[in-house]
Image 1 (tube, helix red, strand yellow):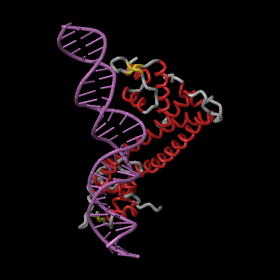
Image 2: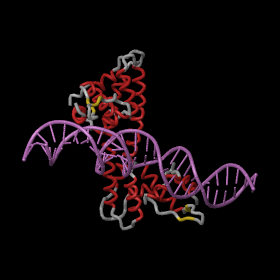
Image 3: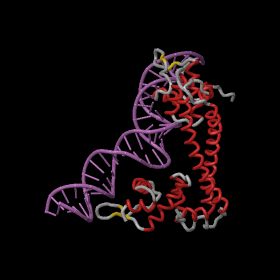
Length: 132
Length: 132
DNA sequence: TTTGACCTTCCCCCGACGGGAAGGTGGATG
DNA sequence: CATCCACCTTCCCGTCGGGGGAAGGTCAAA
C-alpha cells in the first residue's frame, strides 16, 4: 500500500505519517524503486495504535514509548501504567484550569448585557486588581 | 519604571512585555536616552489587565481586542460579550474533550496491574479497533 | 503524448512562550 | 578612575503538533 491508502485506513494524513516515521514513533517504511513508501497491514495496525494514543491525548513522546512497549513482549505493565498515570495527572490539572476559567467566564457572560452600551462587567472584572 | 520593575508589579516577565508591545497588545513604551523602555503606573494597569485576560485563557488576539475595547469608551458591551462567548464555547469544547479522555484513561489506569508482567489493558485498549 | 493524481523532500507558518548570544548601560565598589 | 555585575537591548533558535505549499519525480489512463 502507498501512503495515502494507509492514511485513509488509519484516519491519519500522509504528512503526519511521514512525521511519525521521522520521529521514530513508527518503523521506517519500505520503499519501492522510485522511493515511494510502501506499507503492510501490520503498519496500518501500528498507525491505528498511534491514532488512538493521540486521541487519548498522549504526547508524541509518550506515544513513542507506548508503541515501543506495545511491541516489546518483555515489557512490564508498571512501565505502561506510569506513563498513563502521569498523563492522567496532567489532564486532571488541565481540566481543573479550564473549569476555573469557565467558572469565572460563565458568570461574566451571564452578567453582561451585550447591548450597545459601553458598560461591561467583563472588562470591569479584567480591570480589577486581584486580592491575591 | 524600567521593564523588570513593571514585570514584577504585573506578575509578567520582561520577555512577554516586550512581546505584547511588539504584537500591539499594549502601547509602545517610552524610551530613555539609552533606549531602555520606561513605564508608568498606567502601563502597569494595562499589563495587569492583559495578565487577567490571559489567565482566563483568552488568546493573544482576543486579549488585543479586549484591551482595545477597554480603552475605547464608545465600545458596545455586545462586542465584548461576543468575544467572551466565543471563548466560552471553545473552553467548553476543550473541557468535554479532556473529560472524554479522562473517562477512558481513568478506567484503563484502574484496570492495569502495574506490575512486572507484560499484560496491560492500556496497551490492549490502544490496540483495539474502534467500532466507529 | 499529455494530463492529473500521486509521491518525494524541503522550508516556512501558527501560538505562546523560553533560552541564550552579543552587545550597550548604569550604578556601586575597590 | 577602573571594574564588576546587573540590567537593558535586539536577534535568532527551540519547543509541540501540526498545516501550507513549492519544486521536482512517477505513473496510469485517456
